[in-house]
Amino acid sequence: MQKTQNFWDSSYPSKVQWNIHGNGELWSGPIYNYLEITRKKFPHKPAFFFMGKRWTWEEIGSLVDRMAKGLHDHGVEKGVKVGLCLPNCPYYLIAYYAIAKTGATIVNYNPLYAEDELAKQIEDSQTDYMVTVDLKIIYDKLEKMLHCTRLNQIIVCSFAKSLPFPKNFLFPFVKKSDIAVVRNDDRNLPFSRLIANDGLFTPPPIDVHNDVALLQYTGGTTGIPKGAMLTHANLTANVEQSIRWFYDIHYGEEKMLAVIPFFHVFAMTTVLNLSVKCGFEIIASPKFNLDETLELINEQRPHFFPAVPAIYNAINTHPNLKKYDLTSLRYCISGGAPLPVEVKRAFEAETGCVLVEGYGLTETSPVACANPIEGANKSGSIGLPFPGTFIELHDTETGALIEQPHQRGEIRIKGQQVMKGYWRRPDETEKVMVDGFLKTGDVAEFDEDGYLFIVDRIKDLILVNGYNVYPRVIEEAIYKHPSVEECVVAGIKDPHRGEVPKAWIKAKEGRSLNEEDLREFLKEKISPIEMPRHFEFRDEPLPKTMIGKLSKKDLLAQENIGAR
Image 1 (tube, rainbow, N blue to C red):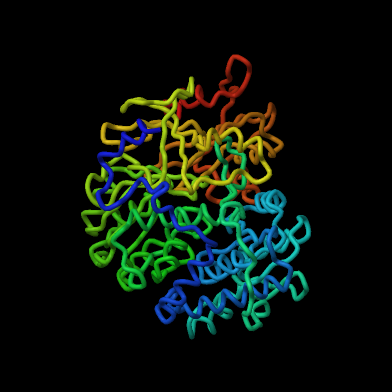
Image 2: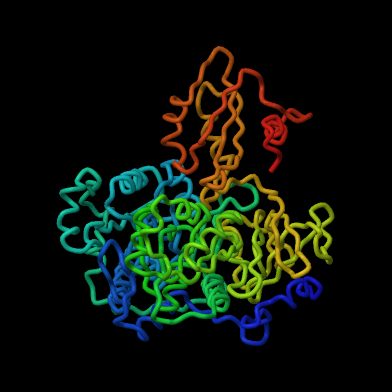
């Protein structure tokens, strides 16, 4: 351990303390305490800006109290799982902290999930309640879940009521086709009815190190979706680490731009929870749109802007970038995918903002290391370990500890942000947890200054705009087509998205396939982000190993792509 620490010890930022063990442990309490403290400190400061409407911390806190009591009165308590299937909007912030206050467990859902994916996660996580909005594209899928899964009740929030006047009045008329017809029955509970109470509610005792605040689904190291159990202490630890890293923070004064979705663990910590802790005003957009994002920066003047590399690249290449003033930005952290050197340089030159690359996993809440905001900010490196985070490299064959720089090994992580384990999968947990360290499946090396450089991925996962896309999920969906005999899905490089899925397919003898028909077939089985961008249909059998297993490695070699 000491030898590993020495890799980065001499290069650690002078204003950041790495060794917090036994000498000032990270603050840990129920995650909802962040809101309680900020509400008292900054009651009348702006908390949330959404499409022209603002809420103060007092207003948000009051809504959280009333929702928490409403949930409790409807049977939500410790052990109960409550899903969030929402775009970025004030309802997400309110519901997240209200659920946590009841002692129940939050389960994040991607609103773009196909019905099959929703059903599987509902059953696996044992989600009984779901919070969503009355947009047809989301609600209609969830309403079906009431009849084919264990889901018992949907809490339906009015999207129009989150908008300012006159948008709130016009939305039901202008966007009538986008609004769902919500059933008027006991299984569909309007948000307005849920919060019709006095908000007087006493939260249950929370064991911060053992009570699971969040189930965040990931493919882990196998590509099979699993729920990472993140405790209250895991979530608060990563926020506290982030605060130490971005030490030049002005509490109650700054603004956070939120265009990456809160249901993604990266945004949940670095955008949502960090802002609540620090009293930042969250400037939120329901989805990323380049022109709208630039307008938000230009008009609302945010200071922090976490995003994936593809977003920074899109900004760099905007044809009319000079018309927008981006100089309010101070700190940006890039995550979810490798940050190209040229993207970093161009963005910093245009904005004067410090853009640092970080690294983490769902299982680490998620940030484990990042480049410092001052000093050496090495292009191509994922930086230095976060405060209180141990990073070790182990030989991928022998498991031996790597004790010298410039030697490759699998990254293993230990720290207060590392998950409790995988939900209902003790065998999978045992595979990735060794002596308190999380085996990441990523291969890296330290340089002589202790900076980490990822050099390879053990996992086959595809990083599309920072989202984990699992080839096996896509392959299983394709195999459901009656004309498919063989299929392999792998990630290929893409200048805009980092990586995109490509599918190689052989049809059954006497059958024919084309891209248009297959895309239509897959629409209800996988989400848009999982849809392969490229299809290749072959007449000959796909390459196989000596034992007859489809060989992704050989297929990529044939394509001159190279093994990943």
